[in-house]
Length: 227
Image (cartoon, rainbow, N blue to C red; front, side):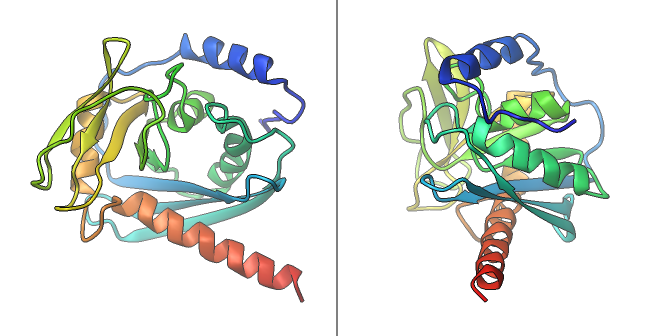
């Protein structure tokens, strides 16, 4: 079902977040994971054009199985804490276009590590009823102490006395990433899966592949439009 968030007010969007949050399920995922997806969005915050990409990988080999990209238009404004209302409609179109739906989807952004526990990964996981993990590069809510420099070290991100993410050092001498469950998966599983997806880079492979893919698709689209 197409999602239309274009004509919502910010207060209406917050109300939707609060309603969706009541459906949140962070129970451990019971099924075996044989495929994992990475999702990313590329956009200029002053533009209405949104580029969404999803890459599906075999797990745990992380070989690419399928890619899908979508160019969409949004009229919802750029508001921190409400970015899912710009991003989820385009991502949902890319998701629906996939032949292989991954067992779990990792999104470049937060899951429950959000002031209202409704980051992009949680929002997408709830509306699509699929297991999701957020892996973000910066903090939106909460405080933490730096993990040790050793790769694989982690600490808790805490907001209002609640652990909302794991602060994970993926590589020595690089900034950590922030791993939080989105929906239909536990915190510990989210951390374990991301650890299995780290290779040469700070960013785990699913979202790194998705980032590179969506930006390449954006460049190709801009090149075609400019002809």
